[in-house]
Image 1 (cartoon, one colour):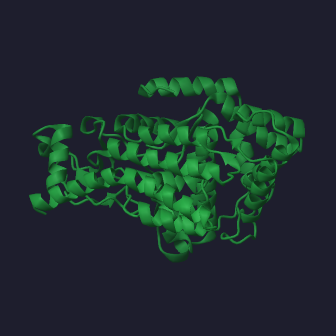
Image 2: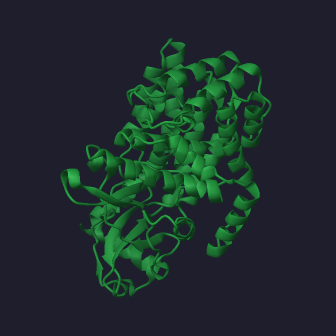
Image 3: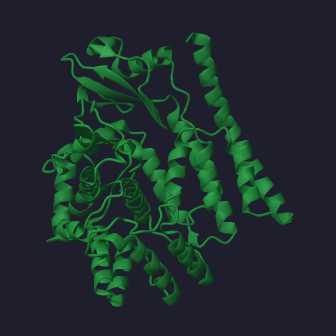
Length: 455
């Protein structure tokens, strides 16, 4: 790729940022005209497609988050956002050289025995290059795209517009706290120094779970906008959808440990469990295929929770298990929900029982338990939204809810794809045995201090 082509790519990015403000206004105007003409949300979604069709990058992460939060945006809006997003155009070799020079200095190339200028993978905020250190060990170098801070702020302003429009058309929930949470987490993802510390912490938290592999951080080859990790080979989860049941169950147990053990013991959760963020290590072929472990990737979207919130999650499970309404109400207060009227309490409990269904049921089962994946949760979500709107809508969702919900639903989706058959109840009971909020607080403080990370 020559210099002119690279300059054109940069110019295209800059033009995109300039267009977004105009596009946002155009979308608002089109929605207003559509409403005056009696149009519905399908037409609104087409308007969204028309004016945001050029968006790429950070908004993809936002859209993925929103699809897991019932009624955060209309489903057709969120689906349009996901459909429209594509990976940001990869940086050419010239751009990569200049970016690496900016991060590691003029002799950057001498610090690697190999470095592939062609990206191995592209993501919303950067791209990954395969390399080798001077000892010949394979590495993954995640290099942030230029001007990402500007892109994030621009895309977040569009998020505010979408939320504002949704509130005006009778949303069942109030999205303001959700918006604050997403803003903070997406901005954190720009800081690769923070992500390196979180990856180190995950290695510590999962040290007694050798089935879950956390890549080693190469600190001397990492900066705020360059993260270099050990390269871990593995296969996508989709390659195991028809594997023997034992193999699929083993993967599911590993995923359960990777997500819920850090949360219940240290108050941290990986908030982005989509399929690209883990891979499977296996040996053998066909019916003899044996899963050796899972690789866990991407530590930019990790949420640190107050230990009291973690206790609230455990207490809600215990209250639902005992069918104790007073205990359920107290757990909701620990989550940050204010005093709830009867209708709102009942609506939330429909959702809580649905989410906790697999872990409340003491038997071997699949996550969906006979319900087709396409229908799973649809009836419950509909009942919850109708009940909340009957109460006047506008339920304020605590910000901590966002990434816990994302992790729970994302992980459940992986279990569904695997068709895992496990006693999720026994797994969860083992995980919370001896739970103590004070112990979680102590572990969290010691863990964060060990890697120099703030809570």
